[in-house]
Image 1 (spheres, one colour):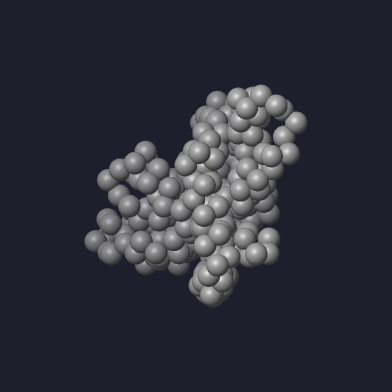
Image 2 (cartoon, one colour):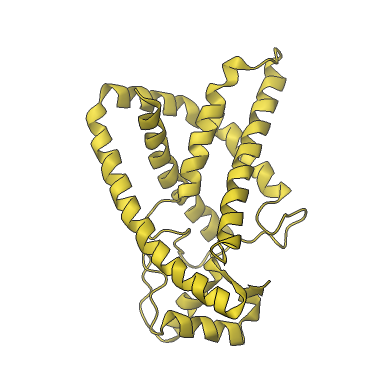
Amino acid sequence: MSLLLTLAFLFFVGSVLGWVLELLFRNLTQHPEKIVNPGFCTGPYLPIYGFGLCTLYLLASLEKFSLISDPFWNKVMLFSAMAVGMTLIEYVAGVFCLKFLKVRLWDYSNLWGNVQGIICPLFSFFWAVLGAVYYFLIHPYILEGLQWLANNLAFSFFIGVFFGIFAIDVIHSAQLVVKLKAFAEDNDVIVRYEALKTNIRQRREERALKYHFFRPFRTDLPLTQHLLQMQETLETRIHRK
């Protein structure tokens, strides 16, 4: 089976499982009384986790080439490499959104040792733990899944369908980000993506309007007007440069 199909399958699995993981984490730690759709896209997938699973798989596959003979330190180095890889993915994605799109997708500014509020030692540690969990509990099943896919290549049709839906979703989400970017540049601000979703939800609940889980940015106001209201009354939700 080609490497391209392998990575496409892993991206598909990682994006969906990552969305579920993020949904549970956010709603257990940040919004225990509400269900909030996490992430940049509308659908049930987070691309950063798709890239992350591809990275974890490739690093785990390189373990046999390790120059460290001691099994324990070999694993320590592997999990450290996984933490670095995941942190790098997180940093690149965060910097791109912050510097080019003027949008902050997540904020670690209140955590010790953070860099630009994008990465921090605590979450790098979590990535190392996640790498260990992946290696011991998930990687064997990933290998079995890839073997199954190699024997059932017809399933690749559904992977293609996923990427078709995903591409449409990205285009739709990008249109929203373009509007946010224009507002941010006109007003010299950085828009906090999750704070905007939360604010829209609160406004809809106050007005007894239905909140759409897969349409978190649906608002009774023009988006620009809603952002202006946030700027006037909720300064903590929008960070100035």
